[in-house]
Image (cartoon, rainbow, N blue to C red; front, top):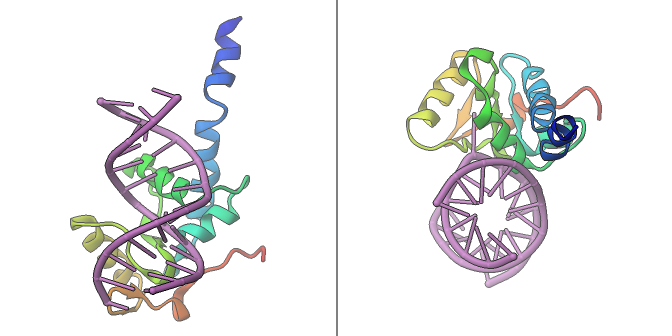
Length: 115
DNA sequence: CGGCTGACGCCGT
DNA sequence: CACGGCGCCAGCC
């Protein structure tokens, strides 16, 4: 009996939270970007921006999640190293314009239909 | 239990 | 623009 209870008690929804966040991310249209904070608030239930970063890290490449469309506040690329380069290339391939180090949020910022 | 580390965000200096 | 501090939260040691 502990097995069932333990399953719900020890993991109150690790997977559920991941899916809630992934769902919002996958809804970002091509050529658009959203911030970690946006995703956090749009998720159901809402969470913190940190958790969004955590969720993206847990995601598998095979999921085909558009992780590159998630940027930090102000359009900054939060990833570091080679990954940040890859993210920028992927975004530019979708027609996303940059200004300096960050995305032109005035052109590509996507907001959930609910707002 | 405590401390450290991140794909965060915001505000102050 | 560069730090630095604080809140935030999951994971690891």
